Image (cartoon, rainbow, N blue to C red; front, top):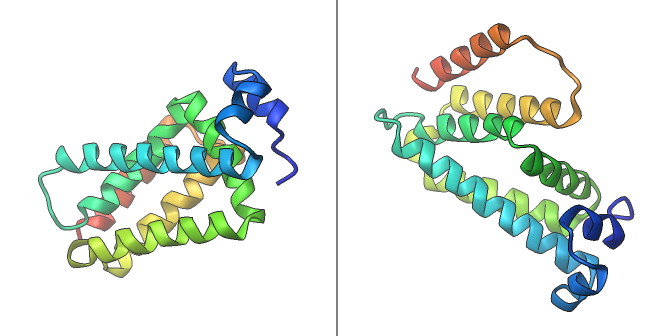
Length: 157
């Protein structure tokens, strides 16, 4: 967790280090609050995508796909997720919270999103999302649209 410093967060947020420490007594508390906020926003984006989707089968998975891939167009959200993702690799408590979030959604949508194809789409989404965060796989927009279209097709099988 040493990669994220209070000074870096202070600078990125425009809040003084003292102001951060007033509300968040340590870096762990701050990162947990950021993680909670990101999960709430991700849940909101997924729910919004699901409301616009008339097909129940695979709706959560399509919402997850759309919400995660839309992050690429939100620079601040992308930076926040990039920081939290790096911390997830080294912080067991936050990793467990992410696993809990995934498990809870899996249980909630077991009736509509438990197929092997839906799991493939969610795992592919995670890979695309990570590639977007890292800037590791350049893909032109046409190829990306075809990939997303194919993933959406898998959720409808």
